[in-house]
Length: 120
Image 1 (cartoon, helix red, strand yellow):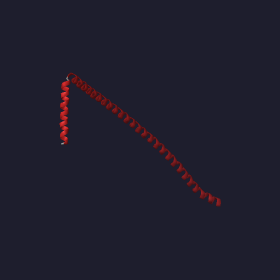
Image 2 (cartoon, one colour):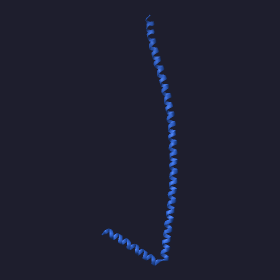
Image 3 (cartoon, rainbow, N blue to C red):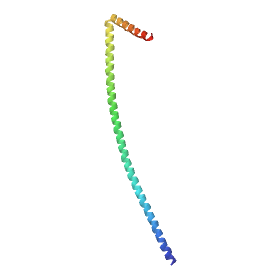
């Protein structure tokens, strides 16, 4: 009879252990499933961020290239204008050496007056 009593007492304990073990296994399955879903969503989000960053980089490179082209064109135009001015000035000096000396002397005189007034 004592075996029956012991056996009847151990059954609920055994059932409780089985219940706890089943619950633990189910919890692990759910945790793994949630972890897998989280990793998949994180990978999707990471891919989206990488795509956005790549597109932003492309746009920035395009804008940089357009700006660089405009600056290069502007620089070339200014350089041509300065070269034309220097060429015209040299031609004027060759064609009119007397006038050139008088103009240079006049400009020097005016600059001298302006600088002298600042010091007084």
